[in-house]
Image (cartoon, one colour):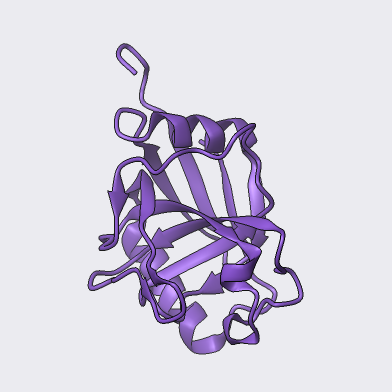
Length: 167
């Protein structure tokens, strides 16, 4: 996307009042960045990852005209990565994931995730490797967000919202 100005978003844990800033990686994931940017603002119940380790995420109904292809893929996200995943309901529709009330076969869900610490591996015992598209990078506020994510892990996610909006 030559000539395009850098674009930024704010990622927040609303109840905790914590916000960080991320730059969209338009040069590496242009289709995914466009889909997310056009859908903003987005917000939903936050979850802490069970398998990937240091990840928080929210689930959304598909919002792109057509599902973005895998761009700038990773299975080893680093601190500050924002990743995009699309899952068929059959991949997540078991009680082990904690949200079987929302996910069922025949549906698709978009997972927007923030990785806040190192040593992540996107390997799920049910489905195997789960590559994600890295579409953004936290540029400000990662340390404070990481502290809030650790608090979320220890004290619980109930009642907390993960939101994404244009900066």
